[in-house]
Length: 115
Image (cartoon, rainbow, N blue to C red):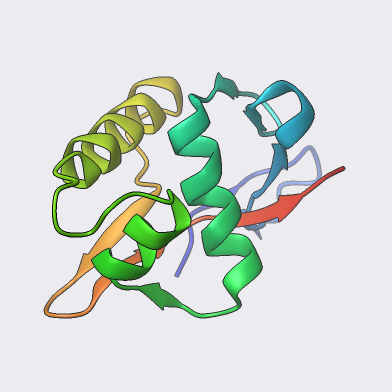
């Protein structure tokens, strides 16, 4: 269960889940209190997670999103690691992605694309 705060009336209220806005026009992931600039690769990956409608994306699906040759492209793990680190540093240690054993990765934050 989420943590709670004590508003002025003294009654505890649970924290509401935060929704992030993915802004493709300026390659930004914006939250209520944080904003992160994204690389083109990071933007394509996050857009793919949101648009695919699946909870988990396999590594091969992510490589396809990046339009890379699956036999030669070796940068996916590095891109995911850098994106995760950027999010953690900018957002108080929270995770953006989670590895799903033998399946791929899933988002652990709620994202919506804002055009």
